[in-house]
Length: 138
Image 1 (cartoon, rainbow, N blue to C red):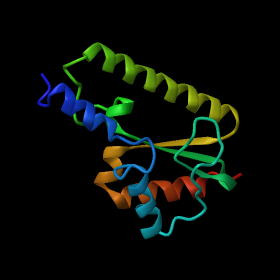
Image 2: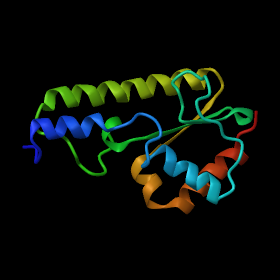
Image 3: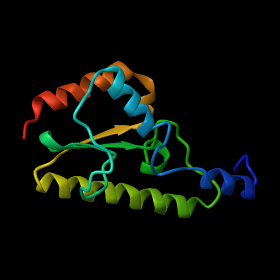
Image 4: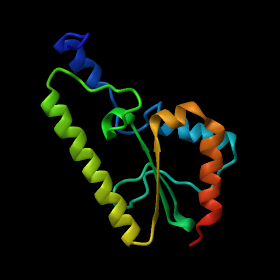
């Protein structure tokens, strides 16, 4: 059972943003700046709407929210309206798979970071991104 009333849960869910999210996109921008990672762009018109792209390297980077994309790090499956949420998250995961496949077929490298990873170990995330940037060339 949910700890919030239906009205409160609806209010909370309405505040969730798909862009400029502090725990995902804005966190990664901070990491880029602190670790001098350059060459990234946001809102670049690429299929699947990656959060960041490195155009010259053809790298599409997504920062996936753990709840919305089905990561089990927090084991937070809603008990109310379970069927709806299970279907929603499954649909998101399938869309992520299709986006990955499509971008790869176009010659892009797809890099996905979980929200929980971005919030745990900044140095490891920065190192992994730098390795990807050094490894893949256009």
